[in-house]
Image 1: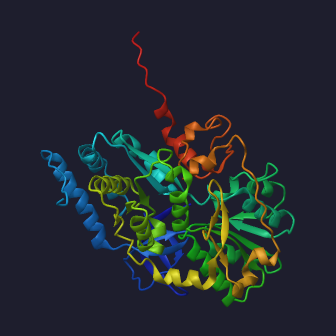
Image 2 (image 1 turned 135 degrees about the vertical axis):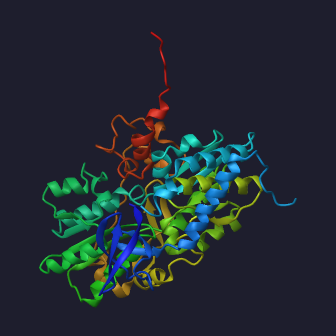
Image 3 (image 1 turned 90 degrees about the vertical axis):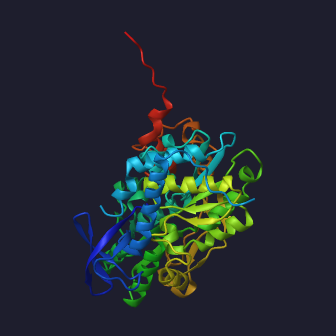
Length: 85
Length: 381
């Protein structure tokens, strides 16, 4: 039910419609629920509607957080950061 | 695919798992509820349960719209098809949910009901356009993610002055369900269902933002981490929750910042509030009547409200006695605590709603987890 997937916007159509590319599959969706999208943006598509835009900088930041963690994990165990009591 | 594959990297998952093992306090038990069925599905499918330390337990929540839909609501849709002869359009997930009189939407279709599976509310609208001589009802279910597309369909139907389209609205609200769980005796009375924090919904939060959860961290002192549905997102969210518990914090944190903001999708929210208003109460499967937990169509759009148009009256129907879906949805029982799990009730022949949707706790455990329950025995010959 909550299946929603990131897809790249490849073409804007009239009537608040657009074509997205989902890993090679092209599908027409509605973009009436989001404002200011451009070709090349990644959107989250749910039941045929784009419901949100992916922020590439935030995505990179989240991945970097995993990356830092991966590096930290390979080093000797360090105690977690704690707020001063 | 971009934004999917990189969030499924097994090596990084193992490293987050190792980090979790380092950071959990061995003497403590951690119980976190993942509200969304999407997270339940990810936890089972990607083996996340195995990668968590033994003292971290995930409690499955009621966040699957198919699972929480009570029988009486499906009965209304079936009545529309069989008694009123309307074309009922619905999402695929609802088709097999058992209803009264051994029926389901798919069985009602076999008995001649014109019931059509659609991918989106817009498709239902298109069917109404193509069949001007027939009444078309969209059986709308779902949380805040699916509500804006339904609102859009109603707005478009009004703009096009469609006379034969209406919606049987069963849209429900996430924050009220979480409040209800926190207020339930099982959670409030110590020991029955301990909940130390929530993994917050991914796609629902795209629409409503992270702000509505601040109430849970402020009033109930429960940490909430909003997380995406990919396995690394879930692992990272659990790590963030463990850190909050260890540090005695109760805050709303956003792991899914690539799409979720604090205020959410304002455009979608404005459309939803134009078309819908709060119901004073709505019955959920497993949770009973939950006040202010669902939406109905505003009186100014009453011509698109199937309940008004066909004068429908909701009748509550008791669940099958052997089925434990109710307790499972509240986190009180696990799928394996149910006598009929995997025997009478399977994804091919579901008795309860948790077995119908692939995001239901029972279906997820049946598909990906049930062999975990069987101890591995190696015999030497």
